[in-house]
Image 1: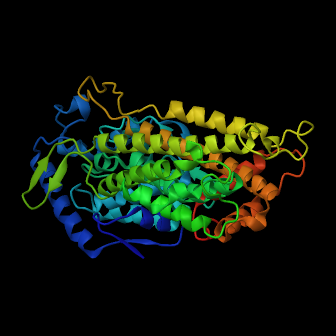
Image 2 (image 1 turned 180 degrees about the horizontal axis):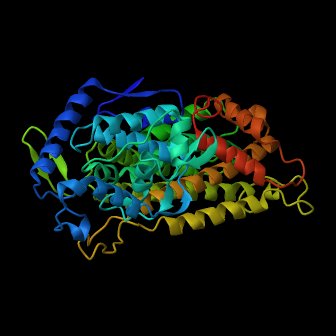
Image 3 (image 1 turned 135 degrees about the vertical axis):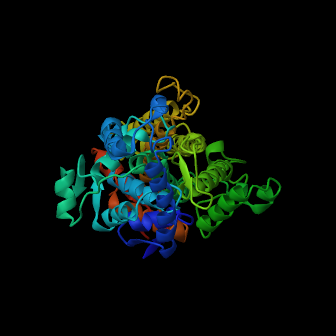
Amino acid sequence: MLQLDGNSLTPEQIARVIGGSERVELAPEVWTRAAASRNVVDAIVAQEQPVYGITTGFGKFSDTFIPSGEVEELQLHLIRSHACGVGEPLAEPVARTMLLLRANALAKGFSGVTPELLQLLVDMLNAGVTPVIPSQGSLGASGDLAPLSHLALFLIGEGEASYKGRVLPGLRALRRAGLKPVTLRAKEGLALINGTQAMTAIGVQAYLEASRLAQLADGVAALTFEALRGVAAAFRPETHAVRPYPEQRLVAAGLLELLAGSRLVTAPGELRIQDAYSLRCIPQVHGAVRQVLGYVREKLLIEMNAATDNPLVFADSGSILSGGNFHGEPIAFAMDFLGIAAAELAGISERRIERLVNPQLNDLPPFLSPRPGLESGMMIPQYVAASLVSENKTLAHPASVDSIPSSGNQEDHVSMGTTAARHAAAIVGNACKVLAIEAICAAQAAEYRGTELLAPRTHRLYTAIRSLVPPLDRDRSLSGDIGRLAEAFRKGPSGLFMEEV
């Protein structure tokens, strides 16, 4: 059972909850903090003090006073008016991650929500009922207003939700899960939607996939390295000790372990003095990707355990302070960086694919074809990889450098962090496909070399690939093979790949 306390959530815990292997409850101290901050809000309403978002309007309407008799109606209008997202729904794991992150943020006790609202968020997670949330429409400052409004819309029994494989009207989904909607009290609507949980949820899922893919990429690259009879001296520790990036050294050492016992790798001068960069520089490039992943993880850990709504309630002093913690710039930068790193992981993979299939660059059958000329073999999968890599280059353009003013120029600088996160996730998905193509080509090339000559660990990887993708003994459509292997890569630790390699 995972206890949410608002301070210690990790990506790995999220993966377990979203994967269905762990339930959630609120830590005991959460209730005390929630009650204390709620008391401050109730006192503001009773005294009809003008405080943003509690007894005033929102955005440009922040100077419009709302009397105490209308504060609940204010929250209802807020949710309904802001729930105008468009586009395809976010994937269910992302939407569930939003629920978990929002519950964790509110559990910190700086948002002034009622215990009943907190409990409903947790109950929804445990019951497996998930709001349908459109993917487009957030500026990433004032928080993820549109996506989070669709989450909040479901809490009041409106909108739509997925339950047991079916999309249902919100109220019906809640009832089937044995739950009841809430009536939003003062500030609660704003507390639900004024935060960075959409961009952070997308970012967490993209980070988890990218982390798994980075590990898999080392194994796939090692298999390609053997198929091309690479010069393994490039990975010796002496070279990497004098440029002591820890991640570079880790990748180089891992490659030597993967290649231990191989009868295909060569010594300098045996076939060539040194390899092309896409082989020789695997530790430098893959290591740099891991550096980025470390940076992204650091920022996500902070954001996942932060209070990002506005205003914030400080029960100890009785203060309610307006600020800008909803601004998604830190996550926008991190997601742009993640997208760039994943694009490079795919980019160097595509260059290794080219070396596997181009007869001018190796001594293998042209395009790894069973009957070159009559059959095209792996010619067009390289085209597909090149197309995906090119697409990634456009997606990797930083979203965080853009800003468009909103709310009558009150909100005059925004992060576009959710766009950055969506682009990063798309790049990671494309990278999975490119690595899958490399793995298929490497397995085919290994068969021409003789799989009995592979290192024991890369042979296990080869066997795992072949369990999903049969050899190419004659031309066939490879779309299903690429998709199946990419999905296996994307889903991560299965023992089939990561734990064996």
